[in-house]
Image (cartoon, rainbow, N blue to C red):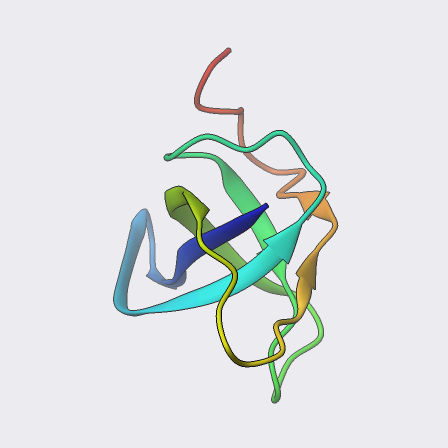
Length: 74
């Protein structure tokens, strides 16, 4: 599945541009995850959209939930 995320900016705020990632996790909008970026291997992010069509460019993979927050569907 492909998803769009926004990165953590400051206390409780996620924003800026949306970035596309591939994942095997069962994510829903609002889930907090750890996303690898070019500059940081572990960037906190929030899922904004799920079930996107496969993009024409390669995507990094999200493989873990953010361990410091609860899941959106719990």
